[in-house]
Image 1: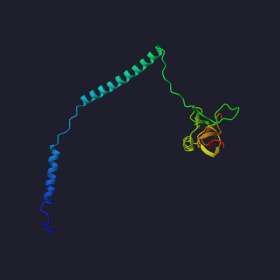
Image 2: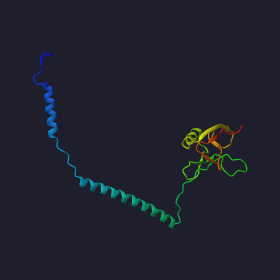
Image 3: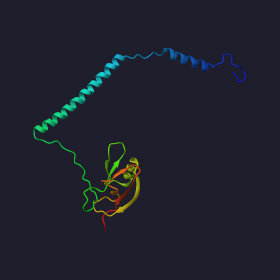
Image 4: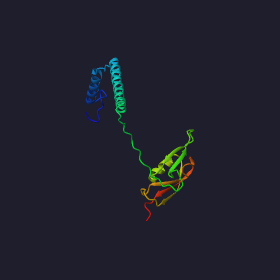
Length: 175
């Protein structure tokens, strides 16, 4: 066929063969069969097995705790990380703790910034909608340089959203 000859059927032999192959495929494919009752049964069996496993683990853990208490053993406790803060003489509160009132009726929440870096502190201030005031450095022994040693105002004063808080960072040991 040349480009000048009109097509008699409107399709080339390749197009006809392609259409026939697609029709054969569409009509020969079997419809998938789902056994929904078996699927539901299998799901319930798996869920029951999982619940039984968790319950067994909890019973074993509880039994181990009961045995330890009967034999006089003790369960290990997690040791808390000791906090180091810079405090002034005569004060019995830590200067890097903020009491933040989020205004949701739950009362103020104590947030300890002791030892955190400035980046983390800025992120926490952003979450609490607190403005960062002046940032200064202070020589304080026993602290990691660049870590927070004091925030102003600090506990027991309550800070609300929109308030400004000043931060003092550790400059290292005094020379």
